[in-house]
Image 1 (cartoon, rainbow, N blue to C red):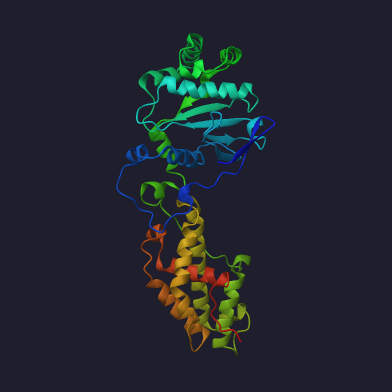
Image 2: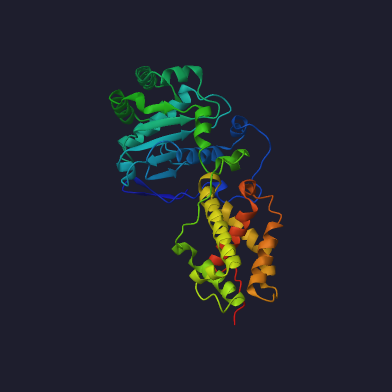
Length: 365
């Protein structure tokens, strides 16, 4: 990530979305259990996973950033509680992707970085500093971190012996300052996150299904069209009105007058149900799949029906009917959302496209 130093504080660029945020059409993967799959991650993939995980933990962060990289001063992923960011309360999530459990000596090297950065004025100490490792913590370190007083004593002892490479690298004045700050710090700030707990929390994010090829969460009921026409319906309803007015010009001039022709009135209400089904699918996608997944489905539906829409038809009603028939026959099985998508959802997407003028039912005069 790009960064620069301004008044000894890290000025950070906005973090890009995780890699899975722009998914390929096919989201399924090999049947590897999530615990096994995360052990195959690269360090960068592990950091992305943790960033995604952090969006679902029960904290009210104003922003979550991924900062891992050279010169990150001991911070991989951070959650800011206020817009003061590092100057206010914040949490640090340290990603350690090793092929063995995380040991105290490896963790201590990261803890030292935090104290040094705080002394340098890069940031204030975090509220919590949480280690996440795909193989967990060593038994010794797990026992130690579960006893904050023992963890501090062992950390101070490590500094006093001065044998660890991370300690030898410190000049004597800095080492003394770190020891003094650590001695007055509550080491309950240092915590660990169990892998199974992290996976359970991650399962509530929109990236989980794509990462681990699991089934989509239950969709629930679709929104029922309101009795009064809603502002967000305006354009596709205007297009439908033009279709109905062409078909019954002596009886239909407004949407309310569609009721004068029972067959068309029933048709109109059916299209509204379909539109709101598609809107519900779009809303569902926000919590169930990575960003861009629904838009990809919508785009492929558009590509699958546009030739029919642009073909010659005797009238708009026939054009609309042909498009709604065509969309039901499209092969969309590569799309992850198709498992929770019914034919009426597909037809509703056509009305979403009409709402955006990407599809039109009447030929331009």
